Length: 305
Image (cartoon, rainbow, N blue to C red; front, side, top):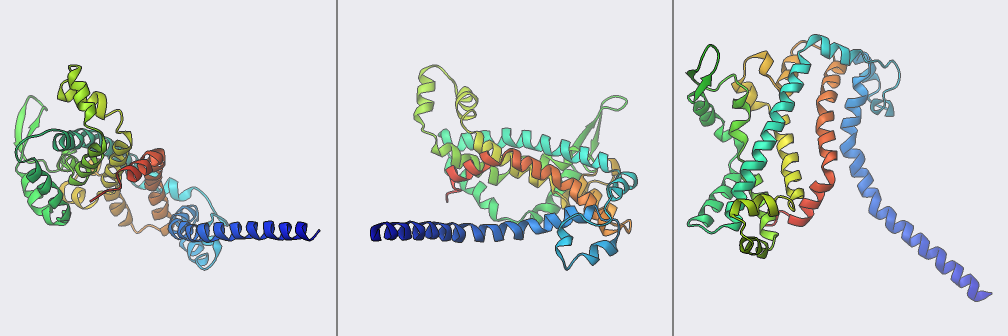
């Protein structure tokens, strides 16, 4: 009888200890989860509230994070009726996917040449590329602006015409950002982990260097391709400084620049939150679609120094 009580007490204590261990493990994660999601919840909830008074009245309670009270879709309708939102969203989507496609191609090939081939000056070129990571993008904005303003541009309206300058065009918004030192570094780290015996086996079978790249390396490098896609998409989608300096036409503007001009209309906070909600959803959807591959890539490469 005594042994049975001791066993029961010991089992209960063990379960209690496991519960405490789980609580200590997950409570900090839950606190971080709420900390990072509260701004998003506040934005989503405020997008459905009809006036600034309703938003400010709920600021000191849980109602600030839940669409309750006088809610409607009026703010979303206002955005569509008072801005060129659909054009902005199509511009940003097209620019983002073109940038991703070109970035994956250019950066993966550059990393392949640096990590799998042998040629003079290879180490120095890699060191220069990594060194550019410490240069802030704002430092290169003005030289880059002068460069694109003097590049030749081909126009096909009424025949072929060569003009000067890339300003106020679509391609000025993505061509300067296709090559990325950070993306090359990610690809380089991932390719370094792949055994080079695969290359030698493929060469024995008669494959050339390019066939080794797209038939062997690309199929097994899905995680790093997903990671670079996510980072490129977020960077392109959130781009603001460069488009506002180079694009003047309303029909060429991306969503972030469109938000700036929409905000200047003296709109209410609920309408700004509705605009912000609609431009946040694509980023979240893109991230969750490639989340598992993104985590796998970070775990496998570890961004090792």
